[in-house]
Length: 410
Image 1: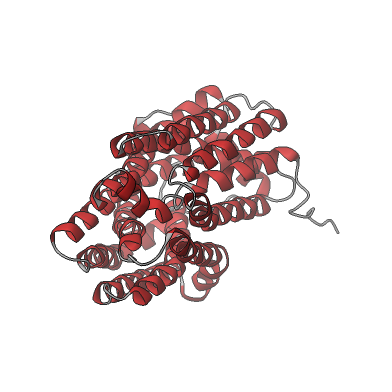
Image 2: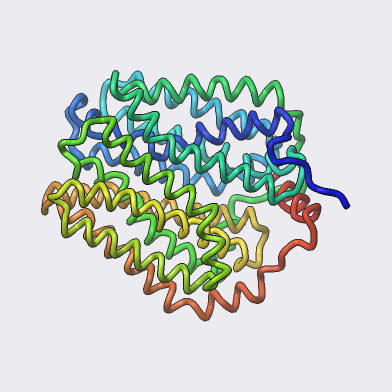
């Protein structure tokens, strides 16, 4: 009886890309601990600083429309290296900036690099790894979770010396990742059909995919509100205290996305679990809104939100992959485009409300947005359920799954 090799016994190419994944996903929470410091040093308002999230996510979302076009023409390895080099350049330029406008602009370039890298990394790990596709995906999810969790902590550690430190730190780490990827990853020529930038937009004509993407906008508005408004609702927390708070958030997000979400899905089903978890996330934001003047309430709410977001991310991603009657990379690009571009306005709107209303308003905004998402899931459940039943053909074997992922993304 044959057994799969250990998940830890992987070629150096896989570990090189996995390391790059960790650094790439650090970018999501890296700036959280230094938001207040950037505002103070560059004489910016909270809403101006929130555009660090908005520019990054908006450009990343729009770029998702072209990642397949690029990869299908120059191949996964060149796409990965292009993305990594862009992150190195724009993270370094952001760290060297002298105005908040420049940091916002260079953070947008960082989002472009991240889109090119992330969209290709999973397929590259699957094609280069030993063992099953399931093991490769677990390795990718582990790298993702480690990056999300460690980003705020690294941002806090480097940000204690200067707000520029996290940006230069990412640039340096990504330089190591570029060298490792260039040396250890074999050449990967373009494969499969060439995709069009219009393919993801056409995919949104399918009602189930559009409904799920709208739900993703709603919970991303809550997600990015939490990320941007959280630090400013913790005025007595120093950089490391904010970093540790969001580190706890990231750990719970990583754990629940990999371990808890599949268990709940098997126990209750995808849509009932999604409705319940989104409702709990909306309630968490509402509690933070009520207790926004009490730092322990806000800090606890941030950490607890990680559990709800981890489950939600996994369930929504799986629903997108199963409900859309199009190639999975196209479905993913369509979903990511709507999710990131729609949700990117959240931080700016939330902190504008904080400036012009009160400290409670950003969290009420986030809670209301997520509550709308609950309503969309509940109302659209029959449509989504029919799509999951009729358009979710699982590959018959690990080999077919690998061929599908690599052929479509490559």
